[in-house]
Length: 292
Image 1: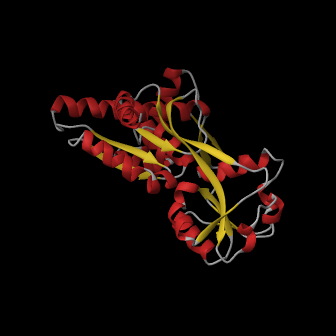
Image 2 (image 1 turned 120 degrees about the horizontal axis):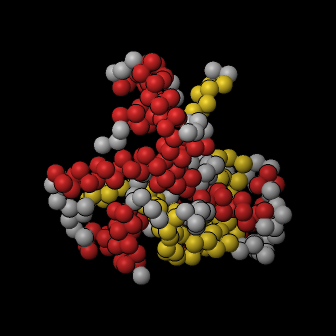
Image 3 (image 1 turned 90 degrees about the horizontal axis):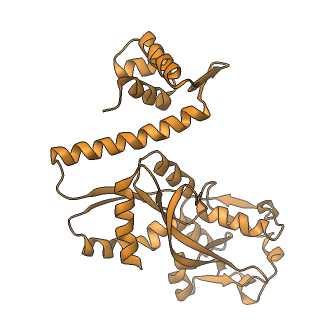
């Protein structure tokens, strides 16, 4: 178990309010203050900063929060093993929307056949959120399409995926190869900030000295299926992984827009923390063995 003062810090870091922390832990507010002061003196660093009635974590405070959450998760796993509360591994992993919807069903099927006693739970979210969950010990590893810090994470490339522009069959853009500038006047259906596919598009455009704002009309939608349906109705165009629109391309309900001098290929990765998450590394390696 973590020292009770570290538990107080974790609760305060979550709710960012001394009064609410005291109520949640069933202690007095002065006791919360004493616990935090003790830690700051013991660690010889400022963990929280209060200014203009706003409580924030310092850089060292954020790092301590991440480390404690990971340590807390490891302690719980050790306790479960010692108490023999579980007989088979149980883990939570993350996947970005595209990978989760279009790649994971086959991958999970392979894993379940190979490890039938294991219990899996999948969280689907954007790349930025999954990385945050991974750093805070909320998931064991993640399948991502966006960029990540390769110094902090262990990783394995799953595949290289084509990222293409698509439009409705009734839209004439697909009938001949276009310069990227021809797309700017069309409404762009785009994922939310933090999604891997949005970042990939933004990076590819910047490499051509083009800002995303070159598209005069944009609509942000967090659901791939909704984006595809709107594009089918010729209410805009979009950029998606080819694997996410393969069925529609075969059926002819969506058409690929061939763009001059603008080809995007991007890898899908399995990532995990290099340190403080032994179980995550072990399970991730099981997946990697099945996919190689």
